[in-house]
Structures are given as structure tokens and as C-alpha cells.
Amino acid sequence: MPPASSILNADLHCHSVVSDGTLTPEALAARAKANGVELWALTDHDEIGGQHRAAAAARANGMKYLTGTEISVTFANETVHIVGLGFDPDDADMLQGLHKTRGGRGQRAMEMSDGLARVGIKGAYEGALKFVGNPELISRTHFARFLVESGVCKETAEVFRKYLTEGKPGYVPHRWASLHDAVKWITSARGMAIIAHPARYKFTPNEEYALFTEFKAHGGQGVEVVTGSHTAQEYVKYAETAREFGLAASRGSDFHSPEESHTDLGTLPFLPGGLTPIWELLADRIQ
Ligand code: AMP
Ligand code: MN
Ligand code: MN
Ligand code: MN
Image (cartoon, rainbow, N blue to C red; front, side, top):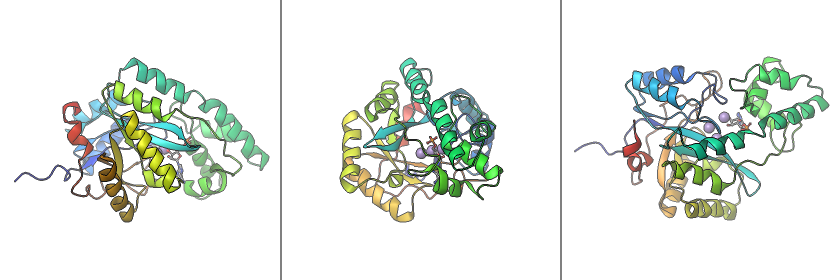
């Protein structure tokens, strides 16, 4: 009997220097391969500029590949991330939508820097820029790296806790894409939309129910069940949610950096049984 398709080392969520990771697409591909990844996707935030490089690097390493991205969305006043997989990386509407989503980041970064200056941290915008690999994609992660480098905090998690989350001096509220637009860009480009790391959102049960219900209504197809952001109990909880909403399940480390990420590429447990792996639905889009 062939192994169940849930027994596949698929890693369908990670970041390169094209967004807020520290490795190039090529270095990520080599690392994924070394860790036994069989099916890989690079999912940079709001950006698909690394897709052709990543697909070529996967091919050079003998790995299967799905195109990927992770779109920032505002839903019920909270930032939600929607992963897209298996879309056409040259789709004009998707490219334009992502370009627009990235658009507010420069201004937001300057306001973040002003907030940090008010508590005595000078030059954070210029400092963060030194860590940026893509000028359109300055993110909180780059500020966190600067605050660690300059000795303000010991590690990036501490920077987020003390400076970059709601109510803290470097936090600037931002309006990202709508859930409807993000799902539409992905599905119109022949891809599938997946709710990333659902346990990370600070939603009430009613808000979470609304997120899944609206996501389904817009044509979303999957949810991350096994991710570096979930505990073992949360794998069980979101496996149940996937069944309840008739969603396929995805698996991804959310790897950003050898120095910062606690979950390496390809090292998570397999998907639990009894779910439809998203890669089954995307079989004809695997390169
Ligand atoms: P942004 O899109 O600029 O709001 O930045 C979001 C990114 O910050 C996420 O994709 C993570 O890479 C990172 N991040 C968010 N929260 C934390 C945290 N608590 N610790 C470390 N990194 C975080
Ligand atoms: Mn990130
Ligand atoms: Mn995310
Ligand atoms: Mn991510």
C-alpha cells in the first residue's frame, strides 16, 4: 500500500531576504533539501518577486515546488495572514494587489521610528533599513533586528514584546488588504488560499468563527494545522476546525532565520491523519 499523502515532508511556509527572512531563496532551498523537505514553497510577505528564483532552486535541488506568498490582511481590526499556494506568479492582478498591499510600509516605518524616538531610541528607521533586502518590504522584523544589534534587547521576541506590539512605543496600527481581496487575488490566479497560523490571532470564539465562515464564503480552501506557531494541542484543535469547515490542511515551519527561528525547515510533525492535505488539491500545480 502506498503511504498516505499526509506522510509527506512538505514545508509550505517560509521567508527569504525578499521579505523578512535572512537567507536567499537559493540558501533556503539548499537548507530545505538538507532537512529532507520533499515539497517546498517560499511564502514571502506581500511579495512574489522571489518565486522564479525559488522554483529554479527547488528544481536544482531535486525538490518539488509550489508557488507561494503570505498576504497581510486586516479582519475585525486584527492582522490576519493568508498564505497563497500554487498561483500563477506572473498574474497581473495579483502582482498589482500585492504592490498596493506593500505600499503603506514606508510611511508606517517612519511613524514607527518616530514612536521609538519618543522613548529615546534614535535612528531606528535608518537602522532597520540596513537589514532590509527589499526596499518595498520594510517590516517590524527589520526594526527588531536593529534593536537587537544596538543592544536595546537581547532577542527579537523581546523587542516585539516591549516595543512592537499593540500599545507599545514602536507600534503603528495599519490597514492591510481585505480578506475578500486577498482570497480573490490568489484564487483568480489559479491558486489556493490558506489561513496561516490561526492560533496566533487574538480573536474571541465568535470572531474566529466569523473569520473561517467569511474565508470559506470568499472561496478560501485551507488552514495551516501544523506550523511552527502552534503547540501540539493546537494541531488537534485546528485539525478539528479544518474538518468542521471542510478545509484542506497545510503544514509549514514559518522559518525566517537560522539565528531567530525556533522551528527549522522540514522539521515539524506530519499532518494528522483524516485530513485532506492541501497538496492533494494542488497536485496539478506542483512543479
Ligand atoms: P509586519 O508585517 O511588518 O507587521 O511584521 C510582521 C512580522 O513580524 C511577522 O511576519 C513575524 O516575522 C514577525 N513577528 C511578529 N510577532 C513576532 C514576535 N512576537 N516575535 C518575533 N517575530 C515576530
Ligand atoms: Mn515574517
Ligand atoms: Mn504570518
Ligand atoms: Mn510567515
